[in-house]
Length: 255
Picture 1 (cartoon, rainbow, N blue to C red):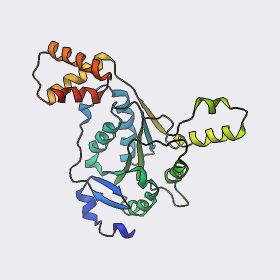
Picture 2 (cartoon, rainbow, N blue to C red):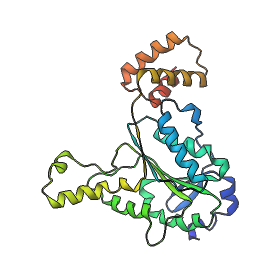
Picture 3 (tube, helix red, strand yellow):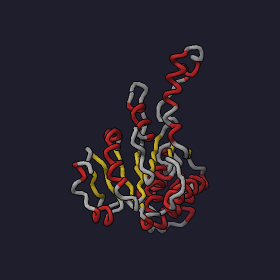
Picture 4 (cartoon, rainbow, N blue to C red):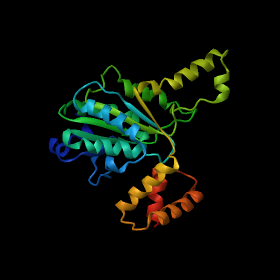
């Protein structure tokens, strides 16, 4: 076992559900941010897709790495946290990895191999790369494995605001006769190909937004008449300009 994990005894894995991998060290998360699936409104299609994939994974069936992409505040990270928690009593563990530690993930593989009774989701939140960043090439290696195979009891769940993780400019797409430019585009787009499940998230319509507001109002015991609640919500979104779950929660907190 890697030296940084020598103090990670089996009972620590048994007693904890969530971990943070930081500076080559795996630390238990004592106060996990619990989100219930029922509290995620307006993303039913996305919820069912990720649930189905994770259910297969828990049962030992083939499942895919997942990329949840789309606009900010639409529930991507919340859904990953909620789905992982939903399966915590079935041997699920979640490990959050920061972008700066991605190339150290290979150090985790030996540890994960030693605990085949658990299923591990490696959660990378808000991942994207700028055109000048070359690290995306190395991440493909992490996802595919080196000559050492990726453990079968491990999946990557990644969220991003970018569909392709690495931006491709319009001018680059227009350079079809430039072989080098075409190769560069293909190389950038090949990263997203490592995710067999890609789920898009988008802003809500007004009806769904108001339903989300009502749900959060119940959770936080906001006892306003529906008409007054809707009136104040409309005033709030006129200021923030966003129709998503995050804005709905922030509105309720403002009350």
